[in-house]
Image (tube, rainbow, N blue to C red; front, side, top):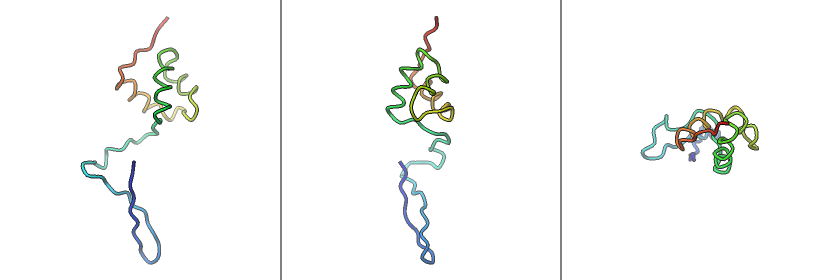
Length: 83
């Protein structure tokens, strides 16, 4: 979650991200992330269908979420069932 503070210059408000303590600027993902519900659905579907079909079956997901899917597969050590 990002927090913002407002800075006013000549009656124009600019929003700048505020870094939380212990958080580096590179800590944020550079790819779209799935929410908790989508992650649970992906973990269940991946075992039978693989990455692409699973992402296509989940509402709100697409090929853009592929990198996050790879992270989930690594973190949860998911193994696809074959045959």
